[in-house]
Every structure is written in C-alpha cells, then in structure tokens.
Length: 175
Ligand SMILES: [Zn+2]
Picture 1 (cartoon, rainbow, N blue to C red):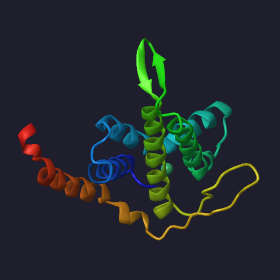
Picture 2: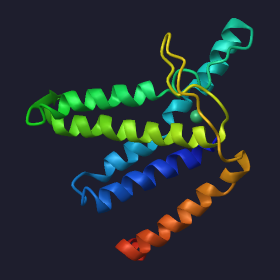
Picture 3: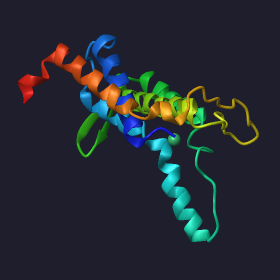
Picture 4: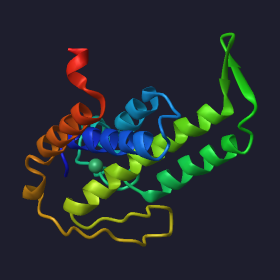
C-alpha cells in the first residue's frame, strides 16, 4: 500500500503538471487541490472497515474491494461528460452561479486523482480486482514493484517538484 502522503503528492504533481503544460493554466489551482484530496479518497474503505468490524464484532474485509475499482473512475468521467456537454449552462447555489463546465472539471480531477490512487496501489499492493462490479470479477491487478520501492518515493517526488516550481515560478519570491 502506498502511503497516504504519496497518494496526495502524486495526484497533485501530475494534475499540476497537466495544468501548467497541457491546459496552460486555464483552470484554478483549487482543482489541483481537489484532485490531490481525491487521490486519497479510495482509502475511505480503511476507516469503514474499522468501524464495521467493531460494530459487527468480527473482522470485516472492505479494503481494496469496492472503492479501488476502475468502475468509480468511469462513473466520475461519465458524470463529467454529462456536465461538459452542457458546459454553457449554470447552476445556482446560494445565489452563486457555478458553470456546468467547472462541475465537469470537478468530476474530471476527482477521476484523475482516483485513478492515480488505483495505479499506485496496483503497482505495489498485490493482486486485487480492478473492476469490482457485481458479477464482473475481471481485471486483476499485478504488482511489479515491492512495497520497499515506495519508501521515500513521496520525498523524491516532492523534492523534484519543488525544484521544478523554483525553476518555473521562482517560489522563493513568495517566502
Ligand atoms: Zn488504497
């Protein structure tokens, strides 16, 4: 299992690099943060496993069964597509207008963060089904890297990203 910090950092760095070099900063850094948080969300099944085990009084296995499925990535992308197809409309919440385009982006970065989580876990966590869905136990994960490969990965990525940020944006100016 990759570390929680690794999941967040990898998702943030990848989405931020996409924002900088492919989208050319056409969306707010808030979406980068949302994607980073989404990079951790599949592990919500860990506290759910603790809670249900203690509530039932026997060990319940939930981790990497439902939330670690590519089904969620596909569902978030489908929701994003529905909003993207009507991107010129707006949603009014508390007298604020939120464009459907931004809602589509919201679900897209969640799908991206979710996917980085599954990819990281898939690389080190052992065999589990990537396509949980009732009746479709296909797509088993393989794990080419040992868990030790992730020791310090978050530190390496963070240092490389800080060097990139210093080179690209002169972060010293903000200190
Ligand atoms: Zn996980």
